[in-house]
Length: 405
Image 1 (cartoon, helix red, strand yellow):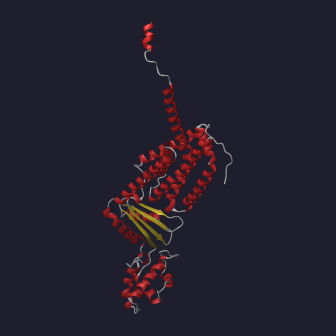
Image 2 (tube, one colour; image 1 turned 60 degrees about the vertical axis):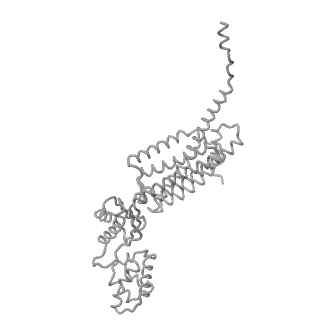
Image 3 (cartoon, rainbow, N blue to C red; image 1 turned 180 degrees about the vertical axis):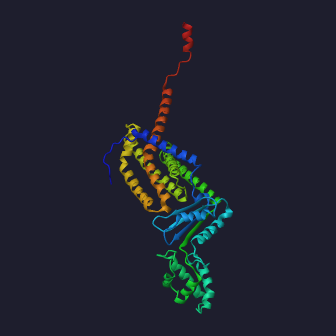
């Protein structure tokens, strides 16, 4: 499929405009990183606790933040998930000893702030074993005959019923439980007496220690460097080392600008962002290889063309393919960014930035670098050729001239 016909854009003629834009973005990003002391790492890398909490109504974000900040020192983040009644509560960990302490403090703080008075345990945040143990004696006292196995099956069915949609972990009324398998009217009556229903449910808790976060950060950096090194070797073997160097510099340029823009936009670097960056390394490199492959083919066909003209021809010939692949991928990434919610926000933002920067770096960064290095090496080769072709001075000529005088 061809979007463009026989185009003849002078891409390399505009290279300095885009190289200037790249330098501005790079300097701005590096300055932001320097002023902020480096990237804003997420809990994956710096260590911390993430708790996903679902509320029965719209979450009171300010109340949650103030309650937790009063009990847990350090940075506390409360992020509302758009379109749902869920929040992501994050706390920072400074040492390994506080791993379980923060989790327990978060649970206690939520219970003290939003719990129901009376001291009854919350049915929305208990497992099947705890529920079965809590019901065993009251059921016997109430004259409801149930074996241990029946009691465990009923508690398990109750939890499964609670955790399936549309409840998804949050029961708002005890009457909803009447539809749970094995929960008879007498059992439901005891459940009402022994439990309370808090207006929230803890969906998931993630804990990453500072040491593990540091190791993950180092491994992410090494993974990116290994990927770049491997691609440099591959392209140098398939084409020439000049092409490999140009491609790797262009991909490194994409990575630096993406990280810099994340710093400018105050976005955190997490494992999902690193995954997006590694994806973009491969995507951008593939785009560059397609253009370079066309250049290699044209070098055999258009031998009399100057290198800059040949590069422009090659880029124009692959323009439709570049626009189709990059455009469709960009639309997908934009959809994730706009409608994917906070969980996918940073991942999709990294894809959007990387696709835009990576597409133009193939044309306006990688190609000019290859052109410059090729012209430089050709100039040196021509200089050596002229030096070797110059006639050598005849030995003794100078002495004979002096003697004649």
